[in-house]
Length: 360
Image (cartoon, rainbow, N blue to C red; front, top):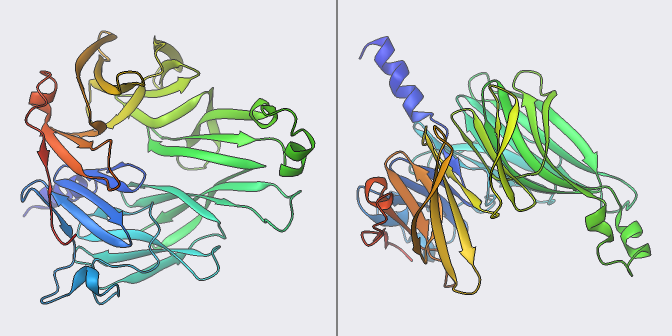
């Protein structure tokens, strides 16, 4: 192959995956972790199976790393399939030490790449080109007066070098994801400005902590990590489409146009943005508690029109290229399915295909 073709192929392999909480969406399927086992829902085979390819492996009966799909210390978030490798974050023995690992697509040749900063929790990781942005939280629980750190660690898989890219402090954090824009890394979080002891002192006011919390959508300069955008609101999936970052403020749905720096309200219905690779349309979902039905909507960024697609029982997880990924709303175990985008936007959701579960 020519050099240009190889570069084009590599870029396609390294296209940003769409990150859910414990799953990653791709053009060819879904990679997710269940009970310490890595599983892949393959669109080609229409199967949900373990990534292990070892002959005669007992898989889930073994619960050891002899099975290529089993990772004893895997973190439920922060993993991805990139080219011919899978990257994941593993926890250490103390509950405050995490490391980034890589392995091949069959769970073999595992390698520890770098130890991450001290953390109690890994929120999420964004894999963009050859760089990994890992969001973490650390709190010294032996000292109630100490503040919590929210940080992002940046690691280059090419040079194998990393550094703390961003840090901020408050008394508590809730994080809602990362997405890459035009020379800007966007993230969203809620932070509390009061300590646990302050909350206890004001326990008669059940809304005390909420009154002293703030919701932010922040934009960081890609190179320096310095703040360049700050919006009052919450990312609620941090969906970025064609230069427009969709987020929520109260019940309002808005977007921030990174080309003009302006914000625009598009709905007051507290819709849930759905992660997507679409260049023109944004997808949303709402839930009616009375009917227990979900409504799927599509917003046209070219003319600012919002239209209802259909109603159904499925949770709308992601739109990736020509596929729509869904999951069940009921039941103890999450079951994934998919449908062609062409059929979905016509309002026909009768052709949903459920992956056949292999090995449990």
